[in-house]
Image (cartoon, rainbow, N blue to C red; front, top):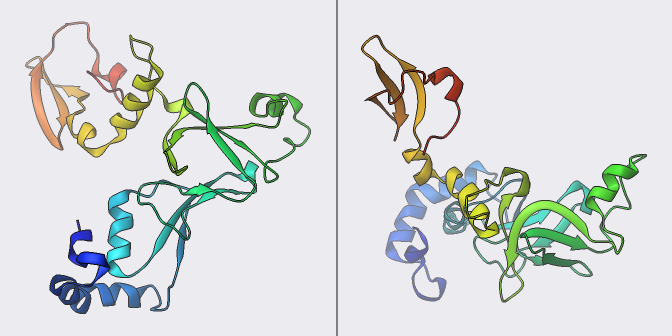
Length: 221
């Protein structure tokens, strides 16, 4: 989006200078005017949003971690790669299991849940690997990418782990959500209304015994 305005080698272009004078400068002033580095974590940071902040002049670095890892696992500082959660920090090992779950090992990982050995055994292996519950991968340069939560995965008929990740992540993507049909109510003429692409459409019920109230909140394919 705004990355092209920076020009070759990051040099400000005429478009950026104009946008900075009219808009970007005001945004920086609204955040105090003295921000040098912003760390982001706790929720995914989209590549588009990160690029916007960098274009505005607010360098924002995405990281990753959990309470059980005290809490930092990886960071994008100082070598930022948009869309990733950065590289594992010093002395921390990260790998992906066969099902795509991110596993972490290192001195930052907890010893266990207080007085809850059963819950501890569910997430900690005997050799110290912590199961994060997040799905993702490491690229060739060891940058970590988080794609989903394991508990949110949707099983497909093919029962493929890769399909699980794509389905669960894709349903939440804005383009897919626009195409989702959610039954909501029906009128006396036998038609149902459904929300699709932010519009209300009407379609005839395929089965007389279909009850929209039972399907509310579910995605119909």
